[in-house]
Structures are given as C-alpha cells and as structure tokens.
Length: 110
Image (tube, rainbow, N blue to C red; front, side, top):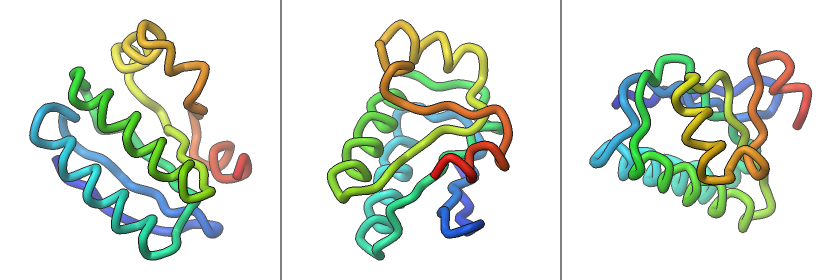
C-alpha cells in the first residue's frame, strides 16, 4: 500500500493506494500515529484508490479513528468503495465514521 500525505485547508489528507489488508494496516497505523504525534488532528483518509479492505483493514480504520479521537481530533473517510461501505455497515462503523463523496464537502465538514 502507498500512502501519500498532503494538507489542504488545515486538514491532513492521507491518499491511500492499494488494498488495505493484513500487513498494509501496520503502515497506516504507523503513519496515523506519527501525524497525530506531530500535532495534526484533522485527518481525511482518501480511499478512492483502495479497491479492497479486509478485516485487518477494518481494524486499522478503528484504531486510527480511536487514536485521532483520543487526541481530540477527527478522522473522516473520502470515497470508500461499495464493498468497503458494506463492511462498515455490517460492523456498525457507518454510524461512527463520517463518509464523504467529494473532497470539498469533506474539508468543509471539519
């Protein structure tokens, strides 16, 4: 998995590319931890180029959300795939995580 960081309107955007599966979830967790440690507490995970998420990936999203929230910040998702949305729905995370279809709407929600 590739993860690129950028900032827009004070929000740190993590552009994810590749499957969020076992192994890749560690990389996401490390980067989120570093970003939060650096004092950036408004995070947007751009999932436009994430075709598949497994249970490890769902765990990584939960851990990332908890870490950011625990630091007094917010973590939101941008454009997860239909399958990822179904997983989030099944696990009850749709009621916890905010999901946006376009970046401008997501940015203005912070």
